[in-house]
Image (cartoon, rainbow, N blue to C red; front, side, top):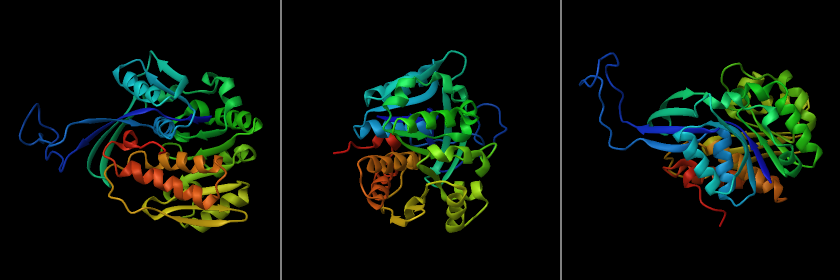
Length: 307
């Protein structure tokens, strides 16, 4: 079973070629109104939600630890997840907090403004995790490190230790780099139970204070981490451990929506690892899964099955 911990968010996506010239007008006025050709689109979002949905689409037994509100958006996200077979025993339905939302105004895959409401995601905590899921876990993927204050203190450490003790492959994605930024000393207690530390180039630079890939990876390996995986977007992905230095190319696709690409990569890569594939093949498969997501205008909802 793939057990995934992370945020579960409704992404409200609006495509617009321009923003209003005047944001201070009262009501509908020529200066503050922009007509759009495409309707508002509601997508699966959040590191946990995206990863679990992709995992389910790949046909993997999957369980998700996260939270949504008892509202219409929470109902929709839950419906999408259960339709792919995701086990939601660890998904909290909050009566006090709304479902997390990201309202995204985009004029292209690299030009967007995001308004985020953390909502029920802030409630995710260690006590809500069914212990039997960690016993059954073959792969544990921890994500949304900066967004889960209840897990950040000791929850991730306990979860990784419990899953690793039962033989799971374990991974932690340190993105997104927001708010009170994670430090290497904060992560160091996790490394005995962590097989893969994952982040994109920017996130690793923020973590290590090293802007170049090689010094950043070397600092983390010297600190005691077993393996560092670097997501590099269209360039592909890289992996560094004490015996290997691997750079895997990406795929050339027309990007429609970039939301969920990194989460999709994580699941594809860990799928390959669990299948016993060589690391270069696992990296390449992760990039393939991500490429199929970004080339769909439905984000992870457009992810095809394994076949």
